[in-house]
Length: 145
Image 1: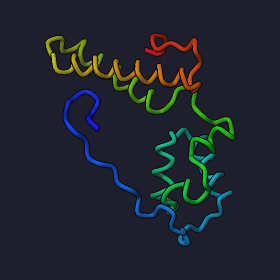
Image 2: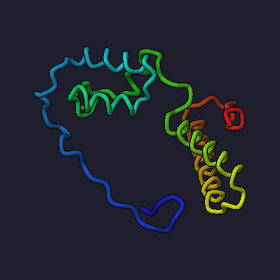
Image 3: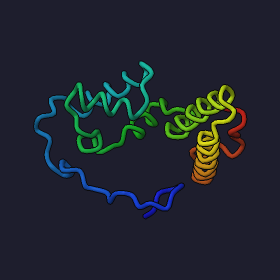
């Protein structure tokens, strides 16, 4: 499958080596791991940052392999899921950074195109999230920007 904004091909996907293997080295019970996830979210970490912290500090390769739930599912059960999905929020912050750069460097045409591509990707994501119920129908991107 080709990449989004170029005609180049991407690398093929690979399967995780630990998929379906027992995880005897994980010292915490599934309930303890859920409590850790809730505590990390209350500290202000995003779902991907929680996954990295679980991997590096607690030795949990993936929460799904141990608890049979995703991090987002655990957060949704405890009403800790963010209002705006994480990937859309990161695109919004990237767009704001590029826009600030463009105000200082008006002749930077490459970043002008990059800003347009980021906006196109955000609009596509917003449409997807509205269709699938992750965002409210009346949610607008312009209010966040």
